[in-house]
Length: 295
Length: 234
Ligand SMILES: Nc1ncnc2c1ncn2[C@@H]1O[C@H](COP(=O)(O)OP(=O)(O)O)[C@@H](O)[C@H]1O
Ligand SMILES: [Mg+2]
Image (cartoon, rainbow over all chains, first blue to last red; front, side):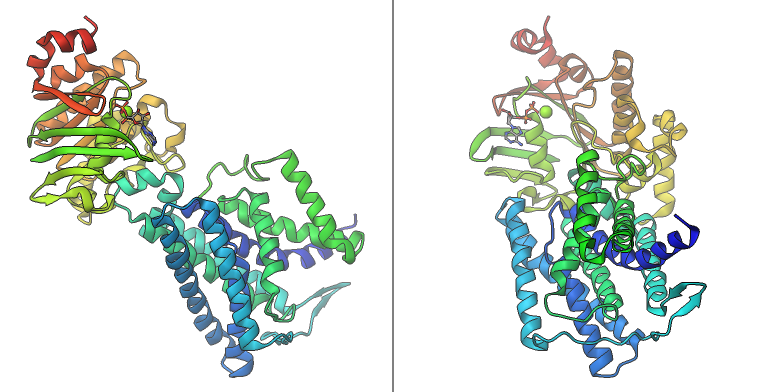
């Protein structure tokens, strides 16, 4: 493979990989704190895209302002999901699978709500940073791709900082590592779950606004992106934060490679085959050895 | 004074505590001894709010703890060193100690307690940058005790702190429990190692099949023929 080829796959794979990583982080963060899978994660992406579309494209609000409103709004929806689904089911000490079904219900409600509000048509979201690519040799760098990478990576660094250095972040890590011991420290473990849902929804929302210009915005876009993010999280080791980031970028690169080398029509099939192989060889995820630390 | 009045508890409908009554005097070491499965851990879980009793009262400072969440019970001045250590495996020793002080704000006081913990367990100072998961069992036990002390509790509940430790370390742990008492703290100690526990306890209770069947001073219980036969293995 020539140097240019590698660069080509990187340029194509890394931006979408960053999106997968953000969604994967949402799954893993919630799984780490609350020990459940949140199937509405992909629909937080969709809501982020639609609310952003509404504010920026329909109301003409400045893009950054739209982002700053959308993100906390979707975070609140995430908190609501935790309060309504997780807490009420926990109170009845339902098995975790009931919570999973509950979040699946949330996903369906979100989709139907979006369908009712914004209709069945795919909406065009113009890139706020323009669509004229920068050409370097045979490579074409699109401003939106660069924008995605910068904002996505910044958000990942911010999350790491939050987990490592803030009081609430440390509490969340403690809950993830030993829920019972965390409660003995006086930590409000329920609040930590709420926080995990809020942060996950917020990252989903940013991912949604960022990919909106790459694809069209549709009411059922959450299903595909949610599944890809989930796979990335599993590849990285569910609940493993650095693993989710690695898994996201890895999936993005595999897809880019598959569509470049073989055919974009088989992209998903090839990507998923590779992922099944990885999970068969390393059931605990690709990064179980490198990063012993999970959260 | 912490007082348990006829506390009953069940797991999935099966009653495992059918009447635990005991009182813990301030500044003293109270020991609960009993065979494996007698309900010692369950009793501590009820006090700290991990398990809600099905009946009975747990009184502490004119309040009934049975309706409170663990975090509020910890706020009220009780903490627990759980059975099996339960340190945060991916955090460093130092971070684990910080988590112990999670509810506290006075940085000066926290610093003082941290140096005290390092005095009690010099090995923790040496290992302070190491992740807890890489410590030996004995070191993890010390960390679990040190972390609990960082909460500055009035009452320290300790669940089998000597379990699985080498004889030399067992002596060290009991020595530390004695030192903790000398700072004016109250200790409720649960142990299968009845000889050691009763020898440092001011007061002891014998738990059998979820019932407190005997109580007395440490020496009284040690000299009780029934206790000798059943628990001291003499
Ligand atoms: N989580 C649990 N679920 C069901 N039964 C339990 C659980 N924990 C303990 N038990 C049962 O409750 C009884 C008392 O256990 P425990 O309090 O752990 O005893 P001890 O600490 O004195 O060894 C035992 O019969 C044990 O099998
Ligand atoms: Mg026990």
